[in-house]
Amino acid sequence: TLWGTGENSSGQLGLGDTATRTSLHPIATRVVQIAPQPDNNSILFLTDDGTLWAAGGTLDRLAPLPDPTTSPTPIATGVAQVSYGNLF
Image (cartoon, rainbow, N blue to C red; front, side, top):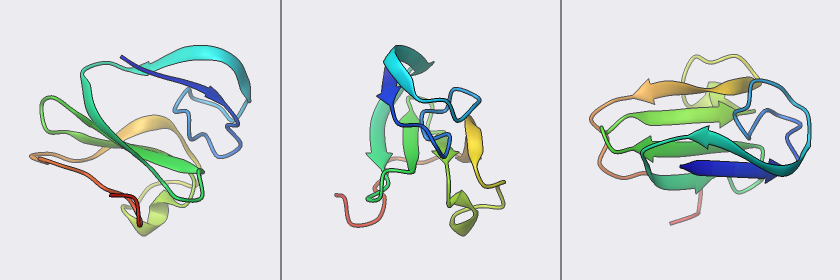
């Protein structure tokens, strides 16, 4: 299970809102890889079935998503690995 806490002004925790969290909250299950954006306002994560999910701000650069995207949204399938920005 992927858990998140902290600043959430762009919905990057994927909890359906932009409220800051001070305790851990479950975001998704079956997660095999995560890739936060370098400026910390969005996240990509990959589940074991090859689905790539996104949440947070500035995602309109990757897919036709609203800004912010406050709930995890699938943006691709058949993905084997993910990196985001300059984080490898």
